[in-house]
Image (cartoon, rainbow, N blue to C red; front, top):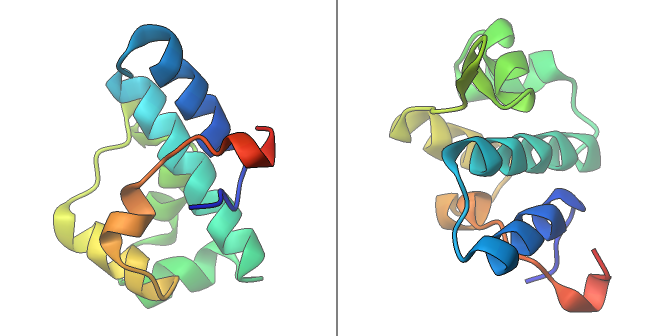
Length: 105
């Protein structure tokens, strides 16, 4: 699976180095993934939030990797499914943050 955004490489390097990633690292990787998918789709944060049925402020926090200030991103399952649908992908693909050595990231 090729990464649409370089954050997937960052997560892969962390996992390779430590053997696991922290909740904060995963939240940061998912935030980069959401931002990258949104930019590739040429949508605004407002458009993604509206299509997912969540508040714009909530989605903005997700792109920062936070649920609340200082608390790592932790969306509900139905929110993740809604976001995956917005980007026309399976929720498993949305949540898969892999390092792709071919991409060099």
